[in-house]
Image 1 (tube, helix red, strand yellow):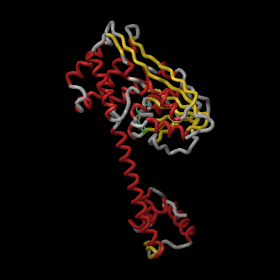
Image 2 (cartoon, protein in one colour):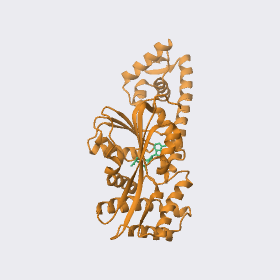
Image 3 (cartoon, rainbow, N blue to C red):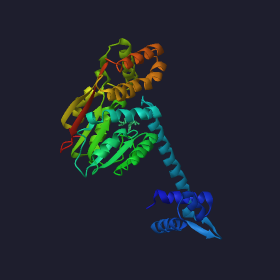
Image 4 (cartoon, rainbow, N blue to C red):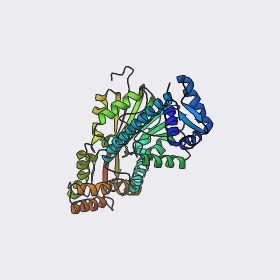
Length: 362
Ligand SMILES: C[S@@+](CC[C@H](N)C(=O)[O-])C[C@H]1O[C@@H](n2cnc3c(N)ncnc32)[C@H](O)[C@@H]1O
């Protein structure tokens, strides 16, 4: 019978004394608030206030409600703060951070390998699709444009990234994407809710990817599919070869493993999905191969995606003494040589598509 909005009303009147001031505080009209008050009084069969002149004084039953409101709202605030702190903890594990450089890198990465990764990212028209860990919307722009007749719910833990993602799809006049703040390990959706799920470059940043896959399984409809795209830094090889460059790449792998995450997760997608209960799993390795004949990939992939990523983590890797500053600088310099005349560069992404069976066993 009593709802949170009623508690907020009572708490506001206790603070500011009149319904008008309470309405201002709650950004509601006075008539909406009077309506809520009448509703509460009729549900409980009591009067909450006596009116004396223009002031509202609490009745004995009203006083009981006032004290309870204060306590419950404070408790709720504590819960919200705790949740924010948990989110901040997750965000700390995210090695790439949320700088403008990282936004540019994610967009460059998505655009450069768009055809390689997304030529088949098409779902049945009318589908409801969850995009888990959408970041700044770099993939959202691509998959939403390819699926104009589906609806996307794109979630992330970072409010700042979500704001950028929203701005980015608005620029393209895309209207079939809803952005939500949510932790993919504890989604605010009922079981069997989405027709499809899309995950890109996210599992590598989680210390418990299987738990996330289980939670995604829960919200996926039976017969629905999940698409997961991840990189695998162990798949990196190049010419000219250089032990300094390999050390710089390994510094990122070590850094991620120190935060409980896995930069080489691409090769593990099949067993991860299988162990979580998904069926009909198909994994396709998608290799980026760059040489002199592909100047766009030299810029977009070697320099703006891969080397930019290593540069982005270098400060933290040095601070954690995973690699020395000199070794990192030499590694980056050597990696850039692969983008010069005669250089070549290979990297493999893994794209997995799997299904939730009819009789879920989780
Ligand atoms: C490397 S970015 C990838 C973003 C996007 N999928 C892309 O490919 O451009 C990883 C994103 O996952 C988000 N993330 C990490 N842990 C998360 C969690 N538990 N729930 C939701 N989002 C999470 C981060 O905030 C970040 O925006």
